[in-house]
Length: 328
Image (cartoon, rainbow, N blue to C red; front, side, top):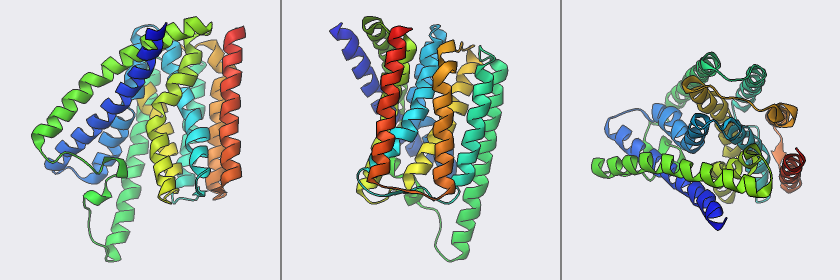
């Protein structure tokens, strides 16, 4: 049994490290090829930081464990809103009025509703995957347009041009050598499937020992584990008094989880949606999305009490999920 816990925790650690070095290596190569930072941020960084969730969902779907594939994404989206927004607010004020946040949060709510509708027509098939990937293309296209408009306005105001400083903070330290960057990519591509294998094996064994389904483990342990990069980023931003990045980080991550991860997975292999998700979890995810839209629209500044309420709500959710998994 000890091996199962080691497998689960070690696999999560391997996923986080492998995803990080894959992103850094890919960015290093992209910079050497002269690919604009905008494209790097919207593609390599966005997909790379979601690589752990993607690999877990793909392997789980191929193994017939639809509960892990769906639970991983649904649980991560819930954790992103309640924990990734709540924890930084315990350290410093976290403003939710970032420019463009309301529009993107509204898109996230719409995507969540579409995802739920598709789930009620289980299994998620190739058609479902193509619908989600088309929405992803729309989101990326709108992000490109908005970012270009912003940078054009900045240049017209006489504030320079694009540099490596425009890259997301978590990937500024990239390898300068093409050889080193290639090694990073290779190690990342090896580490991701290995980490996912150990996570799924460990999670399945732990679920059996706890007397719950693998879906419960995916909604809790795996989901929170794969949300650690986002949590670490927002916590460091709060320490540096840059809490405004939190809401953008959460919205982007949640949109990518639903559109890219489930979209790609469903396009490759059909994904069964367990009825237990439709009773509670997808509705909690939708409620979290609506809450995020409210915070963005009202430009709320989260403080310690609000952060405590969000973290407390997440702990309550975990307790309910575990209890329902035991009695199911």
